[in-house]
Image (cartoon, rainbow, N blue to C red):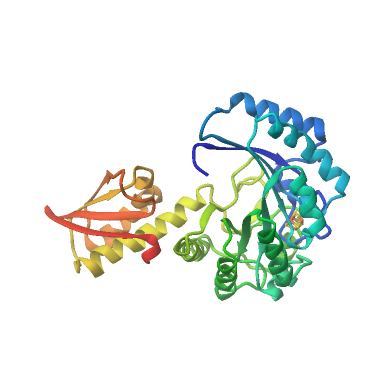
Length: 357
Ligand code: SF4
């Protein structure tokens, strides 16, 4: 999402879930205990609209997150969608999106969603490995994902797919397989979440019984880096990596164990930037020692290239004796690119994008 795209989030915890996935306590994720009614949806949209700009090029979207929106009773779906639809008819919002399970998509459901102006559906796929899905208590298979994606495409919906890494039984190959299967479905956007052990979930019991071992943070970062590169290579927009921190989702809150970090995406992008720096310096430029490197990067990527807590700078200090990494903004470069323009006072020009990793 860019700065001209504004989301009005409506969380619908525990709504319509016919299953209890081992990792999920949707109430904890949304931080809410109550399902909103149409008056609350109305109030929420009104209050967000007061703070949002309006005009040409601005998209204001109502997003129903959490739960399994299309698995609930149709009358309740209509009750929640109606206020959003009315704001859309008045021109106050531009679009509506919902998140749901792959096995809760049918022709009937898509008729209903189209009728209320929903244009984007995000499917919680989590994995395309049926054994992983089974061990995670998802209650659907990869075939449901293929069927739902085909239906969404044939109806012309914008499609988002969410996957989770490090689920029970998911070695790295299973997560890479899931990413390649999702890529083949050509989604408009993807979200990647590392599996966390949250309070009040079945996974918490499995963890304390020694039946589930979460990924280490570094391992999860490396795995997500590979997935980010895979998706971006195919031109697929990765709109989120890692759960958003909230009052509940933090290490002193409901996260019992697992690769949680409040700036998880930054860690992933920094890991990719480190690989690029290493490649450009040691393989392309062929150096094994340098005291000063000058690089140009997009302004928004400067902290990513330096690394969380200057981790990449410290890494290069150890690896090639670097004393100074000078980062200059370059407004022409695409996000995810690095251009090395100076090595120890010598002008050079070595450039790459992380999709070339
Ligand atoms: S389907 Fe989604 S909301 Fe429902 S239990 Fe599973 S992860 Fe949670």
